[in-house]
Length: 420
Image 1 (spheres, rainbow, N blue to C red):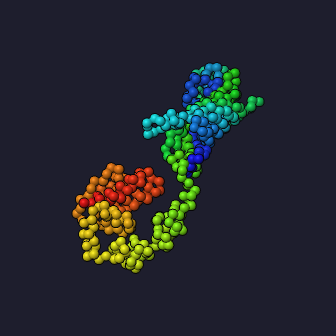
Image 2 (cartoon, one colour; image 1 turned 30 degrees about the vertical axis):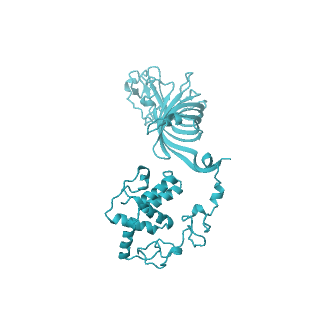
Image 3 (cartoon, rainbow, N blue to C red; image 1 turned 135 degrees about the vertical axis):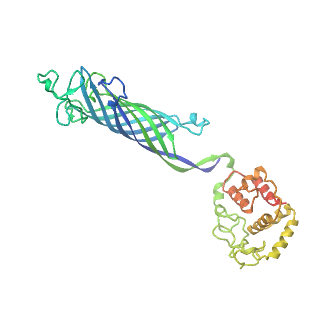
């Protein structure tokens, strides 16, 4: 049976996008030609979209658009205009390409394109601009002008020029239904800007099942385009996941979680000072009590009331300047291997601090740090201090993969060999 280890799995929750764009109508009015981006046809639209990703390639979106559609035709055969407020809701399927195909590309910026198709429902309410602000009805003449009297009227000579006020005041009254089903087809690209935020740029062409949006019936259904830019926020949740790992198949993690190797009352997972001798009183994190805080635990401290900040030896006894100097001379005479052995027999922070003080205060020659140990030189000053060595060892037990047990042993040996 393979052991299971705990990993963090990112669960994808729905994303929400809010944006704005342009609506361009494509119907029966052709006064400006068939250009879908003619000025008369461009109106503002707003959208809100909620998407839920389904696996690696697919997603389902609920979309809503609010805006206006408009168009006009001024020709010898027809002079007509309209504007309609619309509410469009649709559900569509997204086909995403932000998968392995793109992830394998060696580029720092990875866009996420996708295609979509769906089915929707459109509500519209068309109005026409037939009168100016004074209530004068528009009469279109062959010379392209708009007058107050029809061109063929006997009083046409008295007609005054009118100008459209673009206030769509006349509601269309007929029996046509002002709603229809739609089929949106489009493409978009998602550009990530922060961990959960992205910019979405896209366009969708809406095929409708009605010919009454523009007040003109010609036998062909009306359609429209919506191009927009949205700010998208993706909700995520990190969950714990148990995964099989052959590397640890013979490890009983349940026993490890509840083990207390030194039997000091603090589980190994929380014990910062494992290997405490039996019967020694410890604090909440499993370290032997050190009431005078001199770096020597009370059970080995021969001077339990050391003044704070005083230098002590490995037995916790205060050292005078003369004693420190004599000890330094003795240590300098010791080979590096013996220094390492002394530390391994009685490991303490005080011993490391004492060694660092000796190494950094004197004019010593420093050995070059081997390449495989440079990660332990945290401040990159060319010397590995006792604190840096301890931090590296702690990082190893916390799961940082920079060092192996063998390299940690090499690190301890080099620590005492780096000063010549």
